[in-house]
Image 1 (cartoon, rainbow, N blue to C red):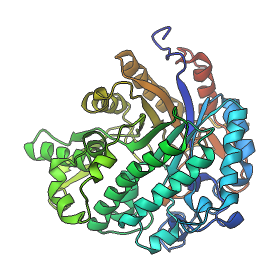
Image 2 (image 1 turned 90 degrees about the horizontal axis):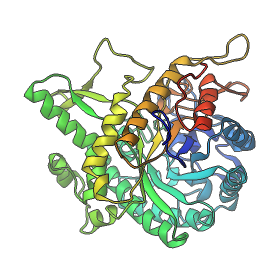
Image 3 (image 1 turned 45 degrees about the horizontal axis):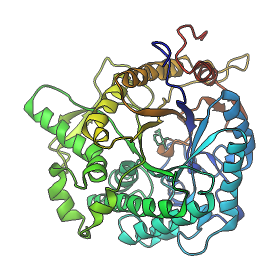
Image 4 (image 1 turned 30 degrees about the vertical axis):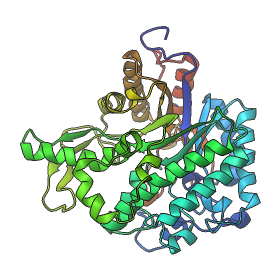
Length: 456
Ligand code: IFM
């Protein structure tokens, strides 16, 4: 690291997307339906009544998108595979056209000197598996292990970095408890079972990927992690924050690193995850080759007897800086990285951390001259990269940073109302324009650091 603002040689600079959010082509070339294809058709589920049917049309425009990745200068690209493209019914028959799409994508990245970082599951479960019970059913974990083997056998000669899941907490709880994501359930038992089976399926997929790929393969998982702060100094709020932390963060970290669920959740796990078997936790806790941390914000929490499950809920302190979805709290990135390092990663020598997502939804748009001056996004990225730089300087093994997102895309229940991209997408025409934040990232990547004078 050359100077106070420089990053280590070989630092990975990437951008991230997911299949349902960008691909479109929802029923093309034999793709099966996913739970999101179905969920978006249910009235009232998506704020702007949209869907990912077309999204950014990346399924057709992928070459243009790879050119843009290259033009910005990213040396890595994190994307997910749509399971229903590869196995339209989620099991058995493997669909050649689906695999061929990802083959072309991986080859296109490698030809341009960009490392592919593959995520196997970013929430688009084949609907046929949902019809059989979905993630609350143990058999879905087994199907996922088989799917992982299929994809790893096909791409494992060229892809080194594999994440099994993106944000299992969100898939389990936002989808099965809060009902805001597909499959739209509000059922605590379904949510806790889904969480357990997602984690179990991670373990099964690790085995499958390691047996199918070259020995240098790197297998990990991507978690959404927030520092949790009590809303006040009261004992009640502090304890509420502890319970919230267990439910949000430790529910994934503890099984993965310690083969145990957090003790605060034991009564819920014991009563709800009735099919937890001996050996499950050991399978979940097999060694990782990297941990992906997605960071956006912190959670400020108060005691709340009305939320029966954990008697804790989130508040939004006035007078803070907010984006369209969350508080902007850059210090939280440093805090969560340090906490993950101290409590979990330090015990695993050689295990790197990737910041696998970080970004912000702030309103932006094309100015008269065709530029997108997204100055708040640049400030957000800069302030968060300062935190990454500080964490590196304290010795944390951070290997890379991926901006969420490459493109303005389908932001789940918010539809297209949120713009996270460093590339602007005109959703009516599909036209792409690199925003000022994308041009700023080019400078950062070229300098391998935060130039004091950025010109923006
Ligand atoms: O768009 C999502 C992504 O799919 C998962 N992580 C958070 C992002 C912003 O909400």
